[in-house]
Length: 467
Image (cartoon, rainbow, N blue to C red; front, side, top):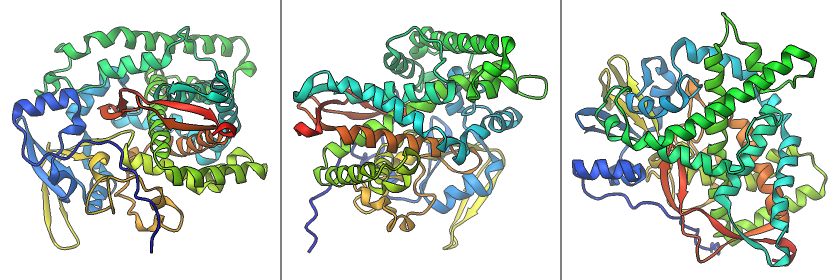
């Protein structure tokens, strides 16, 4: 008999059971796109539909996803709505660039994110996490209530600043997490003009308030670039061998323009750490609601740390910690949608002989949010069950039913970096502290580029010795 406790089911919208009206669609997209999807999106392998006259194919079949993102990826460009939302923020950064500009950027940043290079950041990740969690000691044995959503944004920014920029991001702001939230709240949402496919020069009323904070971020990037360039001109040997120096060295007629460098730096400062921050926060929340899972993770962390293993080894030595993080990314994928548009007519035939016609210009939605909760692919899809990702079970998961980092040529270049960072951060935090929900812990997932916890994640943090 299985005596395991019933798994925790974290908050999420209940799928709609009837089609929404046009007005409901607009209101839901503006409020929270995660609440838009109906029961078919969680039960059918694909759905052909239409939004405001634009034909859309919603894809949840792993074979069809592989066809679109990998096998015939050259036939699919970024969708118009995605670009209308993201390009005003990131311009020609790695997430939004296409064609030769994207190829130049990908080639430029790839050396920093090879698995071997990313492993070299482990000690810095450990140091930054240890420094950050000292704040939890300030209130003594009774602990303190802290918003973990904000904390993880600050922690991952500290790690990114140290590993990729050698701590030389020029920012006088003491409220970086607030600035990120404001930027995504104002700029990271679909505007009614986007739904109408209005040209980018048409003002987006919902984003007017975000331009000031976006200008602030770009000012930080330019100041950071200029400071490093001055150092490189004075004495090249004194400049750190990091991501920033690597990009600046590739500026020129045959490499990246200074504008493209700026766009890529903003991409990694803004989006690069934000995704990991959200996934970490959701992990801490789900684990706090699963005492038996937390106990197993604590035992594993304590045992590995007692051996003196180096942090670069923790990702392989802590399968329970990694599994909890990966399961949290399943339930709350940092990037909840992958949007493409067909360039020319295409067709895919399933193993059963079913034909899916994909006409030119149709929008193809591959949504990790629905894919990761799909009844055809997961047992108890709404439940937090990290055991799915333990080594003995991983083989049951199709490569294209789980896409926290995307797939194909545009797969997330920082996947290894993020996994290592997450395991190190969780191990340090959970070795020393215990995180518990409070009466005010009432998160609700909302899509603002990333999957964020509306209402924050206030949690009681106590030293484990006092737990």
